Image: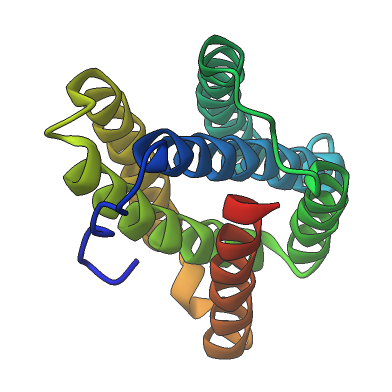
Length: 187
């Protein structure tokens, strides 16, 4: 998130520990993304006049679910435990999705734009960090990052930055995402 990869830690098992942090936090992030879209769709799907955004949300949720499935497989393959806060993040993400959807289509898009902006930077840092020692994983992350960028770009095109209170809403969401990332790496 700083634009600089985290330098390798010294000591036996340091690389494995760092890889576990990466997989744990990415799994948590994709789980939260699915929950955000689930919350938004709970409010907007079937609501009169929201067919367009409901379709967009369904598409993005499907992509996030595919990312989540891949990280679930990686956690199993690499014997990495998920974050202990998964139930908390899932509930918070659903509430964030539902809450922003209740504020309207543009606020729902503002949520997507804010989250994906943080995730894009996060994935970019991880790709740089992993490209030398885990090139296959780095390539997968690059694919996921491209999809996250497409979500962000769609949200911006749909008026995310015109949402009421956009600056405050986006800042709070970005701060929450960054905090969740740091906590999920460790717990």
